[in-house]
Amino acid sequence: MKLFLRDHLSFIMFYIISFISLPIVIHRLDGFENHYAYFIFLAITLLVILLFFRYVRRKKMYVFIKGKSMEKGDFLIHQPVAPIEKAYAAQLQSIQSFLLLKDDDYKDFLQEQQLMISHAVHQMKTPLSVIQLLIQSNQFEEPSLQLEWQKVKIECDKLNFSLNQLLTYSRSTKILADLKIEPIPLRIVVQEVINDLKDYFIENQVYPGSTIKENIVIYSDRKWLKVVIYQLLSNAVKYGEEQSSIIILYENDQLYIKNRGETIPESEIKRVFELFYTGTKGRTKGEATGIGLYLVKKILSTLNHPYKLYSTNNETTFTIDFSERIETATK
Image (cartoon, one colour):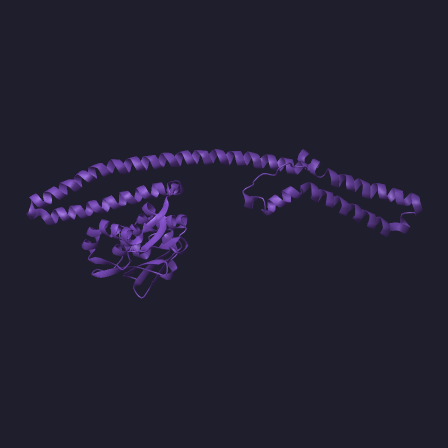
């Protein structure tokens, strides 16, 4: 109530002056009945003057509410003048302090979560590596069980892929802190990823075909770019047709990854980049997590590499534009 009265004090004074003082003054001069229009004119003039001064005193608050200050990241009203501005500024300051405290708590929680995920993944990778070594040794010692050991190896590879994906997701919040932009031979990077996925290609009877020239050099982060290509190629294998080929080519400063398979519905093209969204095809594939393309989007956006996904006539193509960071080297 006190704040209300303080904020409307000028209106109370205006009412007293206009409707008590002015009629008395006009009546003493020449009679109020003969100057009613003059009284209205004076009252309106005083009202305009009052509104002007109120606007000047509250201008900062009006600018803040319209959002001009917030666009610059400024959420406070500096040097408030009017009582309502001072009260509003005090509330905003307390809200900002509360949000900053919550933000610190969230950062601490996020850091703890990342440490826990990283620790858990590394703890699981150790026995997984032992299992993979046992598989390699027993495949040669027991030829009669080679097929069974191969099945176990396939499942270990799937588990290893999921753990790496989880670890990458936990680290994706700090991509900027781990960037190193350098010239990269694109063909070598793609070939390294193909070699890493060699068993996966053979298992699904899908074969890569790269036509990237040796003299193509791009500017990017090698580690994160390999994560992107690895994810795109593994998706191409997972959702591609058996006994088909994945085409990897580079034209007009763009990397193209094409695979044959079921067409992605137009309504799902944008949503497949959302976290945990698996789509129609993902529901039929029990291995879908909805994390892979989200990581691809996040990494490419951070690296400033525009990308595009389109699918038609049972062919899906993913393009990455390197035109802003491209250099062709000579052999």
